Every structure is written in structure tokens, then in C-alpha cells.
Image (cartoon, rainbow over all chains, first blue to last red; front, side, top):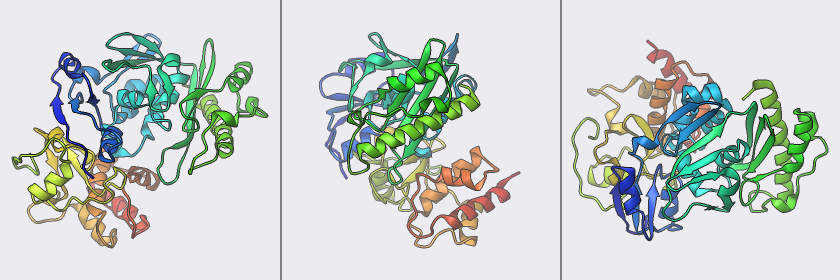
Length: 268
Length: 149
């Protein structure tokens, strides 16, 4: 399969990437979603600006009660970095199960968020952990970032620099993967913070979403038993050839149960 | 650099690395299976780590060190991992084997004493339609024992 022609640029600095990012140009980070989309001609940018060599975007930094991860950090780096393992192992485990090893060596946090695939894993972590996305223009709260299927609050010429994850008291992620594609049919990230529990679901809806009924129940009692009898609204979920909304609703309940159980047993 | 030799090719910006390896450099050991980033038959090492060469533009690899399956055997002698694939009948048609070997080489570097479950997790991006994976896992397990210092 052959993509539409485009011009390739390897950015030597963030400033150069910024100046090239005009019109129909697109940023190329790991390319693990963008390149397949270009090969099937679902995407046809005029120019690709390769930012994968910008070392200033590829970092993990422990901060006071938070973990900052550069947009260019690959899933492999996130899954193995000592600070992630120490402060936020749930995020490391999530990254460890994205795609496959070759995808994890190329794919990046920033790329995943900018793409906002409805079945991507990272959006669930970003939303449940109440992370902040720092860009070349501003700071965007997770709540305001994910707008819909493949849609985000990013402007055309805005570049994600880093994501700052507050360290929760407890957190865990559980997903049920489509046995063929291995994408999440339903993935649930649960995080208990000092000011409350957040539950975010990916894969099941058109876009990552929170489940307030579960959050309130878990605020009262952070235990899998608190989820008994809580219905998941099927109208929030997708029906497609992979699964019905009814089935996804059931998967969300089971994954939420597993995530809470794991969080209770293992900590953050 | 490809398999330790400096190689030059003039390519279109949109040419995939796998096409350039196969058609311009004559390295046909790297296979195109699905061409949709799923099967892993095209995996090569780019600066020491496995990547899908059908999901990387050749221009992205400019200046990088690439190792293909042709670069794994040294001086005519198969790598121990390759020998174990043969020993354990870890292939039938052989189409997926180059990708399997390139993935397993990196995996054993990171995890010299893997469990069978860990081997299977590492192979999630490599499809084999012949063997049912069982003998591939055997081969990698045996290679791990042999390769441990």
C-alpha cells in the first residue's frame, strides 16, 4: 500500500517543527497510527514533520506528588522507566500492554493523545488521573482535552510538550482486548485521589468517558463490592461489528471490578 | 548502516523502509506479510530495537543502524537462536520466521530468563499461521538457556 506523496522534514528543534507546522502538514512522532492511516489513505498530509529525534520531548521526570512525561516518551520508556515503576506503576503496566513490542518502541504518549483513537489506552489514564497536558500554547486539563472520536482540543499548530500526572493514592487499569486486533473493547482506569475517585473508560464509547455513578460509589467505599448493582448506560457506548453496546456495558462492569480489585491490592 | 555496511539509496519520501530493503538493497529476508502493521514479518532492528519496517518511511531511517535477518548469522554460522528454531521445528513455511527471530533477539536481551508466558507476550506482534506458536516458544526458551552467560 502506497501513501499519497508528501514532503518529509526531520525537525532539528521544536522551533523548527513549529515553523513547519502549517496548512496540511502533520507531525510525525512514532507513526504507529498515522503511517497505517496514510497507507490506507485515510490521512494524506502534505508534509510530515518528524519530531521523533527531539530529545527534549523524550523524558520522564519525578516531581513533587506528580510524574511528568514528555510527549515523545515511547510506550517502551514509560513501561520500563524507574520513576514510573516507583510512583505510578499502573501507568507503566498500561504502557506495557499497548500494541506489541515493536509498536511500543516507536509509539509515543503525545502521539496517542493527539490521535485520540477511541480504543487507545492512554486517554483513560490521562482522564482518570486528572492529568494536565502542557502544549506550546497552554495547559489543558484532561477534562477539556478529549472532545470526541479522533478529536481533541488541540489547535492545528499546537504541539503537546508533556503530560503531568498527579500521583494518586491507588490506581489500576484493566482492559478486555479484542482477540483479533488486541485493541481495547473496554478498558477501565480507576484512580483514587485525596479528593475523590475517578473512573475512565476507553474502547467502549466513541471517546474516553467517566462513569460518575461508579465514582460516587467508590468514594463511599473503595472496594470492588461497591460496584455491585451499578448499571452502565448503554447509550454512552458504541455498537459495531466487534461488539454490541450491551456487551460492552457488561465488559465495562467486569473491567471496573478488576481494576478496583487490582488497585486495592497493589497501590498506585 | 545496514548490517554493518554503509548503504545508500535514493528514495521517494513515501517509500517504506521494507520496500527499500527488499527492492533497492536486495535484502529479501525481511518479508511483507500484512502491510498493515499487524503481522510482524517485516520486523528489523533500527538502532538496536525491533520496528516494523512496513510502518516506517525509509527516510526516517537515514543515518540509523539497521540490522535485518541477513545480519544475524555471523561468518556463515547461524546464531544460537536461529539454530534453536531449526532444532525445535519452530517454523514450517518460514514466512514469519525473520520477524520472529528479530523480535526474540531483542526480547532475550531484555529478559534472559523468560517464562513461557513472557515469551508469548513478547510475540504478540508476530503472527505465525503454521505452527500454533508452540514450537516457536520452545525454540526461544531453548535459545534463552543457551545464550545465558
